[in-house]
Structures are given as structure tokens and as C-alpha cells.
Length: 183
Image (cartoon, rainbow, N blue to C red):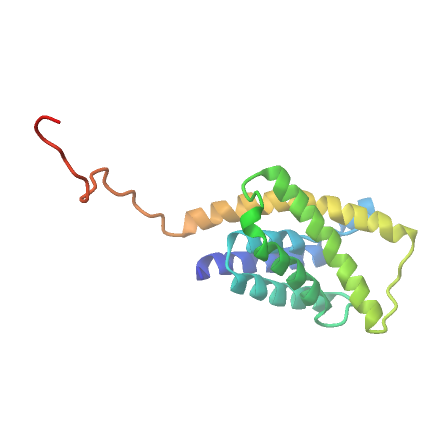
């Protein structure tokens, strides 16, 4: 587990939750708030270890739930489910393609609120649901899809800037056989 990349992802999750709670202009324009945590979970699931996915889902979900009216831990479960599924199937997914990143981010941004709403209803809470909720879900899905390739670009550049880059080896291999004479 690369601790530096996990710390970069956690700082990104903290910054995303901070911006979601403090910046209000997007909510006023479109009637829905961007949720960047599913896009960050997509990045953590496809590029980092499962421990990093668990840590990001746990801390990011608790940070998000502490500022929302959700029961504490509801977002943790939804983020962890999305991250665990993506991490399990990451060998089959196109990680480097921006369209695949967009679709995975949009899918995670759609699945996480649906799981959270389902869990809230199972716990006996009554979330406010109306036809406007479909508009909010559509805006959150599109915004999460857009955030996902941005997260991949930013986190890859930060990891490349701060992580050790291995030095390329010499072109001469010691186990190479040199044949001399006539063949």
C-alpha cells in the first residue's frame, strides 16, 4: 500500500466534502449539489489498494454525513459498496480511457445516492422525495461523470509529482548470450 497516494486521495476527499458544504452557487443554479466523493472512490478503486478504498469510504462518508442530515454511516456503506465492486472488477475495466472513467463516475454517482436513500428508508427515516429528486439525481450523475476524469488527471499528476519515479535500467542485460564465430 502506497501511503502517499492514499494521503493524496484522502486530502482530495476532505477538500471535496469541504467544497460541497461551503460552495453554494452550483446548488442555486441547477437545484442540486455536486457530489465528488463517488468519483474519488472510483479513482481509489481503480488505481489504489483495497485498504485505500476502505479508508476513503470510511472517512469521506463520515465527513459527508457529519454535514448532512443522513444518519451517521449511511454514506460510508454506499461508498464502500461502489468501491468494493469496482475494485473487484478493476482488471476488466478500461482505466485509462476518459469515456470509461466518465461512465464509471456517472454510474457510481447514480448508485451511491440510491443506496443511501434505500438505507435511510430501511432505517425508518423519511427522506424528502419528489419529482424534483429525479432532476437532482440526473444533475448529480452528470456532474459525477464529469468529475471522474478530472479526478483521474489531477490525482495521477499529483502522484507522479510526489512519488518516486523508478530510474530506467541499462539496456545491457547480464543474462544475454553472445554468440561468436560462424553460426
